[in-house]
Length: 196
Image 1 (cartoon, one colour):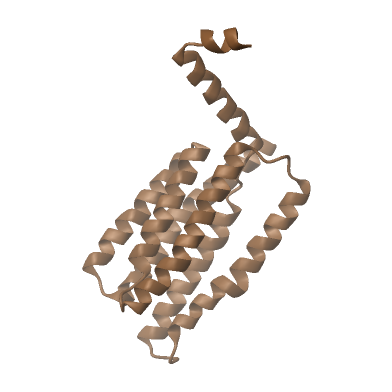
Image 2: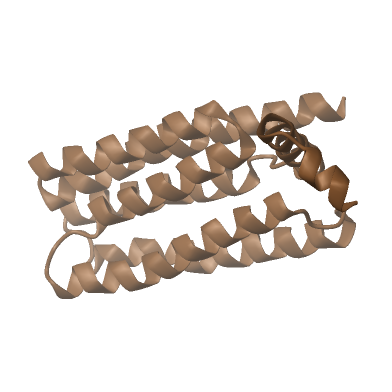
């Protein structure tokens, strides 16, 4: 065994690593569900927050974001619970993917209160973090639309530098459409074509 390991060239080692990742990718297929779920919720919450704030309909228009907690978290957890009952054993790729989004979630939980407490809009920071997690998902899945979606998120974060905080909500909604929903629907279509 040691002789075999010593005789591998760097190119052969890279080929074996690539083949291992490709096998893991075939066993781990993302159907875009989470991108669609969170994309639609972000569009709805951002739009509702903007509309309620601009028309001064309620004193706390930011309560529109409770949609994420009340609808998003239970639906996502239920989906993952149901998927875990029928899915194949986890792969290294699946674990990395999960850790990226876990890190994203922790970063969001820390960043949003820090921005709000400092009196600044958290949206540019959210877009940067979402862009990073989406980019890494695109790299792991080797799915270019997610990497383009990440670039949209990052561009949106930069655009926020020139806008008012209320306009940030519209940018966030637009970024969710282009950065989450479009790649999510493409992933969904790709997943369906694989199962046909």
